[in-house]
Image 1: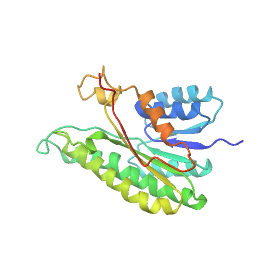
Image 2: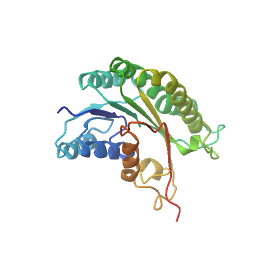
Image 3: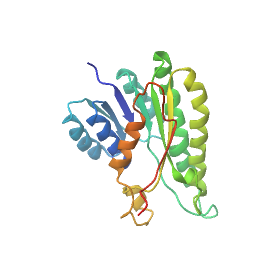
Length: 230
């Protein structure tokens, strides 16, 4: 039996790494992506112990060359699931935000997922199956203060996800929007917030994996994941 393959962008650490590990534990071959080659190689070693295959694509998700490489590997591997996970956080007032930060947030959080999805979408439509998971933030649903640029990018991703779902259903493709709260990740820690009570990325990854399971009469379109209240 040939394993199905999942591509997870931004999988050299954090939630992306956890997603790769959870899917590999459930007999999926993995396409890892990120900029930290050493981290990617260490994660690949863990994945290979699960008796599944794993391939690394190193590169900046903002680069078209990286998107093209991801597409070529996805095509070769007959990809089943695309997880658009790569993202950047940004806080600050609009007045104190420079153009480079604006471009970076929009490129990584919105434009790159759209471009990569556009490249891989035909692979799914030809076989009338596939799942696209867009990892978003609860900040898109409940907008916080001093997150104008970040929320702009995530609101855009929300609109892309919801709109694409209409045409994708006709092709037998599932589109899942995932809205995640604070996790114990480097990205969240860099904001200066206390991560001690934040969610474990492995727990979040397990919930996302479960949402991707095939059921006869029902499917998950949208998922909000927050920490347990204590």
